[in-house]
Image (cartoon, rainbow, N blue to C red):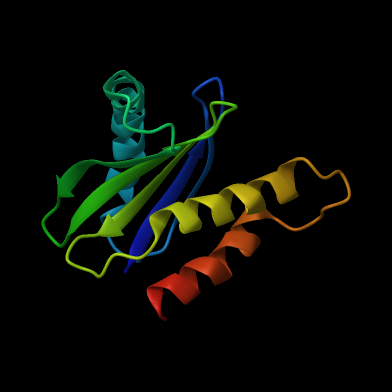
Length: 136
């Protein structure tokens, strides 16, 4: 699996965190695509709730981005407090348990934002996890 970008959007739909794990011109597309994905999270959530399938926070693949260098699947997760997380994963890589990845990111987000004594930047917390998942 190759995680290219992680974005976290707060309850007011403001971009709270974004970090890129690739070094190329595709980075500019990810910020734009984060807002596109944000528009698709509510319909995906409603479809899931109306279908009665599950109340699981992982919404699955919202869509695929086709860029000149690589193609990426856009995965989404929404918490009970309406915090939204989006992960861009390079298409054609093996799939791992994305629910576990999202839950780990959410735990790191809570640790860095809701603990007044926590001094570590969220980027520094998430980066080792991404390196582990990307197998770098």
